[in-house]
Image 1: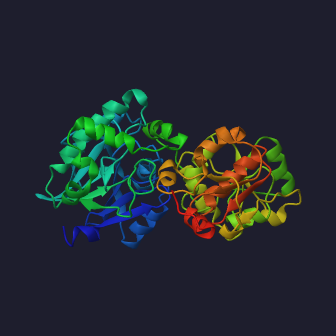
Image 2: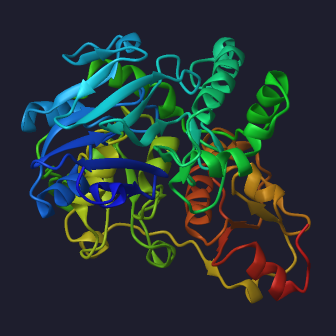
Image 3: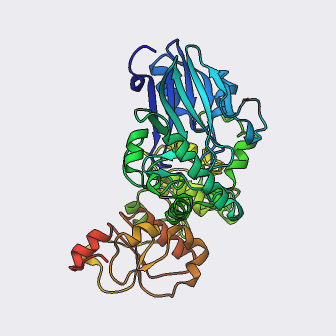
Length: 450
């Protein structure tokens, strides 16, 4: 293989989902894609810049947090699909088992059975002749941890956790210099560790990964499960969708612009309004009953957490916000595109509007504060006396909260505004949002976080 491996392997990071996919330059104008998402835009840009055609697409496992783009690559690019024989996939692919090797034309991909994150999970060693360049570990060994094992149901969690223990130790037996290219990373609800590193080495993980320091299997299982937080409900449906094979999609995705009367009629017929504008714009005026989910990298996760996949929805956006990006974020997690957007944005709306006051930290007086961050964030430091309810739990529990004045907060303000919009939909009227996070509020009030 000519050149350093790092120059031939392009990491494509989806910061919103916390995942990485990989494009491997095979040196002859062809490429291998590993764990590609259905949103192939960045992969295609990377391939075109290097003059590459994707000839192979490998999935390490049946993904729960995004739809695979492998079927799309096979149909549109003629890529050969590589995946576990144990996955029961219903589309044409090369079925691989432990030890199987695939000739990539000068390089070789070797399958290693590493069940745990899923029962059919494979890791892939990348070999150049006898030289081992690295290993794509998917949701097995990741930077500082291992991916969750509780997505197949409570009855399988312990067994999968014990398999994960053995898989990590199998991977840890590789030479210490071996590069490790995981799929899941910081920000993924499939994993617990934080930190910004996306790749690592076997040696680094042996020295620093807490799960590899566990003295025995029982301790490993206890430690792994203790670190798992909540996850979006669509995680329970996507593995089956990936097993069947996602439908082929056109690019660009078309979202119709609806005049106000058609938009109102769609709402009356049951469509939910998702307002993707920045939180300051939503605060200053929005359609009553709409849900604020600001269009940013994390949009897909919260759309999938707060709406059912079959729920028809409409969007309100500003003109400078990318509608194509919004649509691709939705479809990559198994949601349909919006039924339409409000033509002209809020300027095209002539009906009633609602306000959600956005407060600076110094404007928050004594009173009730609701922290909607994840459990791990809350327990790492929160404002004294703050109530806590994860944002993902709010749709089912908003009616349980006592009425009255309430300031909603998160880390910066986006999730808090989403939470406030859900509370307003549930009938809460005296809801405000903190523009900032716990550190800002603590500094303004002279309190220390607890």
